[in-house]
Image (cartoon, rainbow, N blue to C red; front, side, top):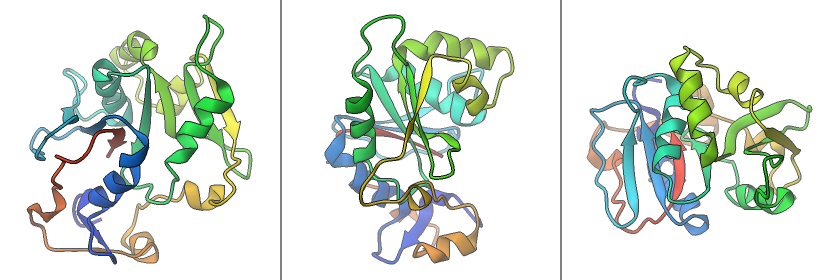
Length: 209
């Protein structure tokens, strides 16, 4: 990609990270920025925090970031949003919880994902209950790095996509190449601190590289 994805600049002038934070802010009480790179030092403020992968799992992908989030989450549920999913509607997280209901016993799902229009399971973006912390840590300790494989080993449910304004094709579109970035209106801007937002106005959600 020629540099960190969060530094991509949208045609609106906002960085990808800032754009995601602006979209998530109205729906969540706290924002946790999950990163595997200790060198990243975004400013923190209010109820926003930057979390680095816990040792000894640094750099081990979304599972390590999720573990950091579950360890520190102030709420039962953590919404895990990849930084490169700029079209996923944040309200879909809320709708998913309302559809399933809050856990009321050992039989309740603790991981919520989605089924796209082709019936394929999507665990990113997804919702994860903090009670999954021990089993996630155990999986990482055993060398498991596949988030999808781990999700399907715990009590989970995949909900058919029902959003009435955003199709599943758009919702699960992510940015992996410069061409995909350009299609979604992003370009590589100058590598400056402009890609590090002022977080003082934010209160939550979870984002992950």
